[in-house]
Image (cartoon, rainbow, N blue to C red; front, side, top):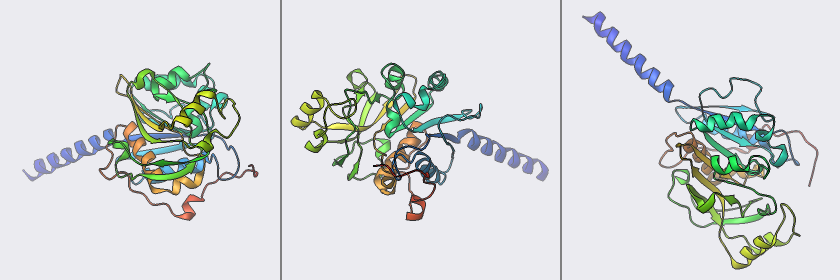
Length: 295
């Protein structure tokens, strides 16, 4: 009798262990190569920092691949969401080789996608239709702009990505006037603010300014600089235009929003008070790329 009882207990524990393993969410970070000057576009350091925070969340596992696309052919096996933090435009890692096709197969299965800062910019010729589908929005040259400004996020929507996040202000290279899906279908603005006059001080250019942006700034229009998107197949995307300055990952609200968003796109439960994490100055300065000074 005791033998049978022990066997049943062992089987029950095995089922629980298998269920827990099956429910584990695998997150992949694609960190782009070194870019810009010290403290800016610190893709690898930023990804490692976010990974360290997520490693404290039960049921989550993550891996960081440096210098863009992983060389491991099995890297995406069982992945729940892909986080891309890299340069964009023609150099975007997703636009190289047949990577869009590979990612598209994952998106068709409902895998999530998060793009941080410059990684929200594909090119009009390649990637934009996919980004609008998978992510809900994208930076479009001669339409969107990338000024440095202090955004004041006075209110936040009721959404899993904002759990535990308080209204905050922070200076960054916040892109705005993004290209979104028609009618914002399935897209929820998450961080929104009113760009000030300083954002139109530069001349017109592919990233710098254009008449449409000057008009909206003059009107005082609110602009979404981070957004959540849902796809018809249940997949989720999150675009976040901040992250130019590595120091901003030290801001609790800034960091928590992105950590929440990663979990949300992975279809993991976001804690009611958001992902809890602390960052020390030493942790913030770890893993920075060795690169020459650049303004």
